[in-house]
Length: 204
Image 1 (cartoon, one colour):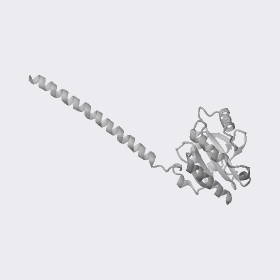
Image 2 (image 1 turned 120 degrees about the horizontal axis):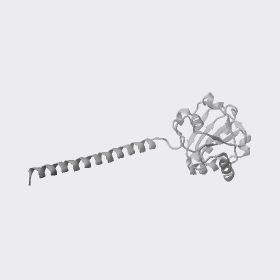
Image 3 (image 1 turned 90 degrees about the horizontal axis):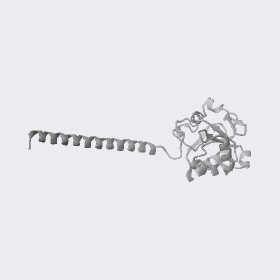
């Protein structure tokens, strides 16, 4: 075998090794990146909004407390105006399955609870699917018995005080205006704890 043939085989071998090495390196790097993302996601406590524990017990910012939330029926509410009542802000999306599953937790409260000072407000997050007509139909179809308005992402962010705009998210404010609970998502545990928090605050 000639020297040239040996050199060509050697070069081909080196090229194959390099291709294999870089392919392995890229797959390994991708695996490490995905693992890091999954670990970060799993580190967020279930049922609580990002940073929710830090906000519980605090009054909302003045700009948030005075912000007027306009309802589909033309009424307006603000946290400042509702001081003295137990206020629940429930952020949802009409396309979200968990938002739909969450509704019965909210609608279980009745006029007697309202007379005791409960005010629940539903807030549909605006997107391409959430027109006023579609949200109004959603309210009728799901038997929602409390006022519902619409908000855009920046307004949503200002209330939850986080870049996390997943839905549903529920904020509960005590009669003195302080945030007492912040829930993210929906499952049986969240439904039970949210109901208990509202009942407890109504007793105060």
